[in-house]
Amino acid sequence: MTEYLSPGVYVEEKSSGVKPIEGVGTSTGAFVGIAEKGPIGQANFIANWTQFVNIYGAYTANAYLAYAVYQFFSEGGTRCYVVRTCHYTDIATPSSKSTVASTGTLNDDATPPVASLKFTATEMGTWGNKISIEAKAATNTTPTGGFKLVVKFGGSVQETFDNLTMANVLSLVDSAYFDIEKVGATPNAPKIGSSLTLAGGNNGDFGSDGKSTLTVADFEGDAKAMNGLHAFDVVDDINIVAIPDSLKISSTGPRDAVIKGYSYCQNRNDCFFIADPPFGFSPTTIKNYKEAQGDWSGQNAFNSSFAALYYPWVIMSDPLSGGKISVPPSGAIAGTYAHTDSVRGVHKAPAGITDGYLDSASGIERIITKSEHDTLNPTGIDVIRSFPSSGIVVWGARTLSADAEWKYINIRRLFLFLEKSINNGTQWVVFEPNSPALWGSVIRNITAFLLRVWRDGALFGSTPEEAFYVKVDAENNPPEVRDAGQLIIEVGVAPVKPAEFVIIRIQQKTLSK
Image (cartoon, rainbow, N blue to C red; front, side, top):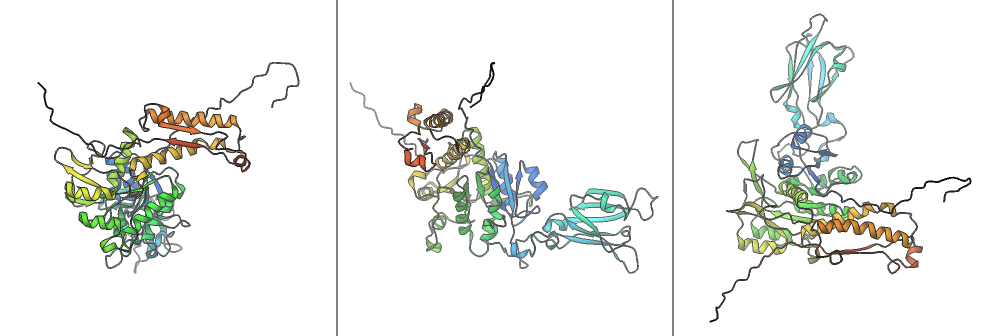
């Protein structure tokens, strides 16, 4: 309380007690996979396809990460985080670029030639094998021993560093493609006309026999090393998680990666996992795959409200081959989630002839009939269908949960949105006096937030009283609860569930005389 010691007029500010709760984002993607280049084992924010290409390279044979991110943005996604992974045991020292980055050396014109400059690709991977460097005569011929470096990538000139000498080369050459160092104590300038192509890069994803060396651990990552999925541990705002390259796992199979993926989301309790099916599965096989029957009998069945499984793969144009390619659907589905969230809201199921339409797909791997769909939908497998009048659309909105309460994707994601928004918006309550005055403020603030959610159409009921309630009183906060330093806030909401089955009953009407 302010102390008043002398006569006068005193102006005081008093808090209104209104602490508006802001809704958190719901449409930020998170992808783990194999890339052509880029930092390994860390999460980087990506705002568009061009930025992804600049950091991670474009499409890569035997990998689906780039295709997934491209489809994410094509379907309406606007922001995501990307983690490049590899088989870490293939890289002796992941923090050392020299173990996996392409390298090469230019020699001087001595007899015999002596190494002059060493070049190491800035990023790990075989992408560096496309870098070539040529030493030419400098434009300014005044300095003795002057030279120029012309840098090509994939045969096209990308950079030129002119009027170099061995005295200034390290300070003047700042390349986006390589790091440069002198070889030896007093090397001579490189021979004019000499050139090299970097070599020896290793992506850390395929062995010398051409077979994938990836394991579940490479995608799940390590919490201590903070790579793989755990690279997202320091990222607070991811919402939609996918591992499109998990199907490259060689030994234990991608089923374990699905379980690790949704377990990660479940443990965080703030994001949702999109699972991909293996390629070429029949409806019966994908059903067994999900339920751990048939070839997977005895394994753990998929069961989580924090994940959904989509089937089959989708077909898109392939810039690498100039033809078509089948890709896992998770990238396109993640973009569909993001787009639906932005135009309709997280409470809307990301499916249907409008919200579920896949702009980036030119076909699907397999046409699913209605009778086949009838066997898959009840098991929680969301089918991508092709209809003559509607095109290729997502025709399912179920989670992998065996609990009927969490059957629908939009219900689970709505609750993630509500829980995180309310949690973030009530941090101010901590250490406040636990009294009826505080209870009233909490009720007002949460009620104001839920009113906005209800008006957006996310909650069922013609009145706010039907749609939700907020209870903070002496009944759920008796003396023993307050003595323990706790404040119990009870919130109940009635979510809107999707009209999954539309039943139209038609009968003949008999006209009476």
